[in-house]
Length: 95
Image 1 (cartoon, one colour):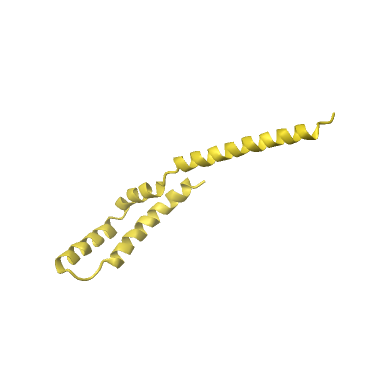
Image 2: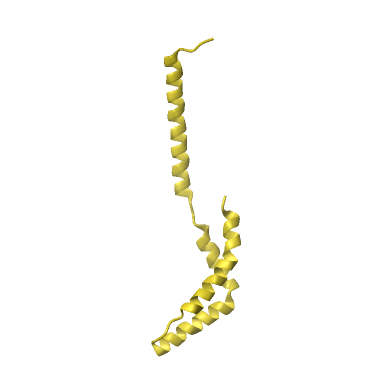
């Protein structure tokens, strides 16, 4: 049983075309369905950091009253706490 070269080439070309369309469809669908869950996870973790949040908010109020200074260190303490809470949840969702 032998196949003609032209028949094999035609089948192979059709296979490549179908595979390309399927790959493109998967890529396009994946691109449309991608939702960054990290943002919502981090938002939910903000409630796990009341001490850091309160300190940052107090700093903001002080800065608004005095008009000088910054709250950089308090902000980074808050973000660190949120990231510490969110990281395991985010990495759990990564496939």
